[in-house]
Amino acid sequence: MVYYAGVDLGATNVRAIVAEADGTTIGVSRRSTPRGPTGIDVTEGVLRTLREACVDAGIDPERIAATGIGSIGPFDLAEGAVIDPANLPDSIDRIPLTGPIAKLIDSNDVYLHNDTTAGVIGERFHAVSNPDDMAYITISSGIGAGVCCDGTVMNGWDGNAGEVGHYVVDPQGRLTCGCGRDGHWEAYCSGNAIPDYARLLAEDDPTISTALPVEGPDFTAKDVFELAGEDELADYVIEQLAHWNAIGVTNVVHAFAPIVVSFGGAVALHNEDLVVDPIRERVSEMVMTNVPEIRVTDHGDDVVLEGALASALTEGTGDRRRLRG
Ligand SMILES: [Zn+2]
Image (cartoon, rainbow, N blue to C red; front, side, top):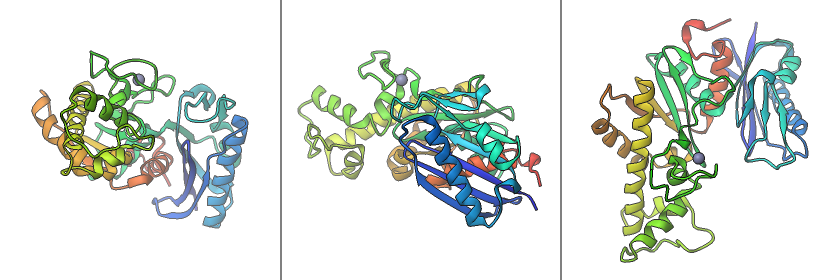
C-alpha cells in the first residue's frame, strides 16, 4: 500500500497530513513554525511535523510515495526553497524544502507550491466538475490567488505567479501596500489593511458617526465586521471593501477566465455574507465575459493543507484524471 502526504508551511504554524491513495486521512500533525534562528531550523520543524504525522498514521515516512507542499513564499523553485520569507525573522534567509523532504520519504515526487496555488489545486480536485479553469483567492492578512488555466496550474517560472493582491486597484494610490508600492488591492482589503483603510475613510468624512475605536492601538478588521448593520462607518467601510474587492476579482476573471472562483482566508471565511456575497453581486455586473461561479471553500482553514495533499495525489495538478495509486 502506498501513502501520500501534504504539508502546509505558514508563518505561524506548520501542519502535515498523511493519507491513503484514495485521499482518506490517516495521520495529522501540527507545530508552531520555528522562528529560526536559521532557515534550517524551519526545515527541521517541517520534517519533524511530517514525521509526527507518519507516527500518527502508523507508517514509516519511506512509504510515502509523494508529498505536496503549500508554503509561504517567495521561492527559489529550482532549489526547492523558500527565500527571505516576509513574515519570519530576518535571520531566516533560505528554507530548503523539497530536497530534505525527498530524502525523508525516499522519493523525488515532492511538489512545492505557494499557499494559494496549493489552494487552487485542492479546490480544483474537490470541485464537483474538477474544472480545468478556476481560481482560488485568499483574503486574509494578505491577498493572493492561485490559478489553473487550460488545465495548467500556474506556478510561474520562479513559483511566484498569482500575486494579485498587488494589482493596482486605486490609481490615486492613497494607501501604501506592505510591499512598499501604492494603491494595491491588498493595501485596502486585506485583514492587515482594513484598520488603516477605516481610519482613512473616517478622516475623509468626519461627519460619519462611529463607535469603532479607529484611533485605538487594538483596532482590528474584526471590529469592523462585528459592527456591521449597527455602525455607520463600519457599514461604509464594508461597502468600500466590496468596491475594491469586486475590481480585483473582476481583473482576475478577465485575465484567466475561470469557471469557478473559490475564496478562502480568514476575512472571507468569517464574513461570507459581508465580503463574498457583495463580490458575487458586483462582479456579475462588471464582467464582460463568462461570469464564474463564486463560492467559499468547503475546507476552511484546511484549504492549503488539503491542496498540498491533492497535489501529491495528482502529480501537482489537482486533476482527478491523474490520480495515482
Ligand atoms: Zn503591494
